[in-house]
Image 1 (cartoon, one colour):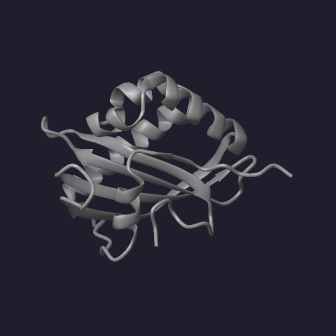
Image 2 (tube, one colour):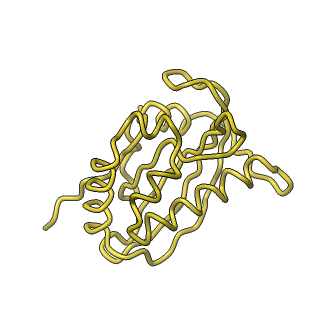
Image 3 (cartoon, rainbow, N blue to C red):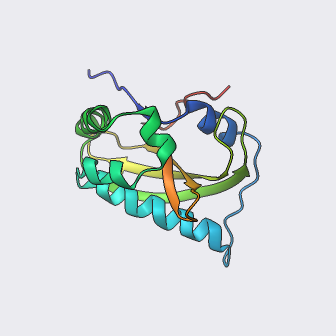
Length: 155
């Protein structure tokens, strides 16, 4: 049996901090959350297509500080090869926070997806866009793990 190794890029502390206690905020008409989700969906599409260099280029500055281009491509490629082709993905919640501890100051939205892959039927993908200085939302953190396993950095 293959041992599953999850992928966590960015600050696990951000995911751990955001995944507990904050209230879901995704509501019709919430422009920031809509824009952040759109940025996350577009970024995930690049990852789904194996376009890791492009996903790196579109990631936030803090993402790029946490991981180099070659390291990102290698880790993402290995994790996605293990998970297999995407079958389905559905956003389950979005939670926003401002200036979380252990992360650069800013506005963040934690977006959790329930996903299914060919080799990982029940997965949780967590994408954390941050609003950067130019006003655009860019992915600062990404994790993929089997459903039922705690997020990195979670208590």
